[in-house]
Length: 211
Image 1: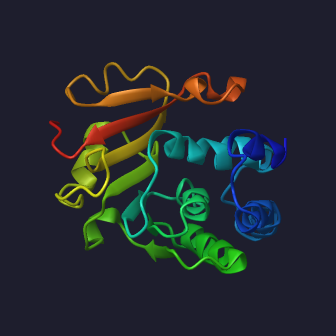
Image 2: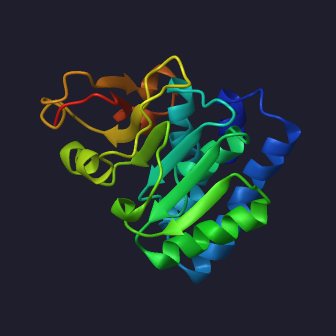
């Protein structure tokens, strides 16, 4: 399943964005042979399992020009790189503690020629600065994650939705989110038809959360 699945759900992207999204496949195939960051099966279904899944966040929240987004535990660059292509005037900081993964991110970003991504090899606790939103793809349970990113969300909101966390998760989250009264859970089946998304969700946690 190629880029067609992406164009099905994001038909209004520019020619330049389509060019960049198309480039992703060859860049990841090339770098994955040198540094394995994406499984073989996932490389074959890159656009659905990684790119479109990452862009599930964009179905919940559009990022304004000039805003800042932190992607924690980005791995090979997800969800940060697809979101950075979609929102070229938003600044993305992609963090991972594993150096070889950030090397792949660096090379993919260079290959794409995008300038709104800052890849950093560090633990998130070491990152300075404040962000409108923090995004991630299931790197830890929510209490652990909120502990990691404490104090990194800007107080002043530039968007209608309050600043906070947008977290790609799967499965039954009842137990994990029971202490987060302000959390909102969005099923990606509301936006994407494919069976892959049946259990996939975006959890939104505004700045003032408990936990």
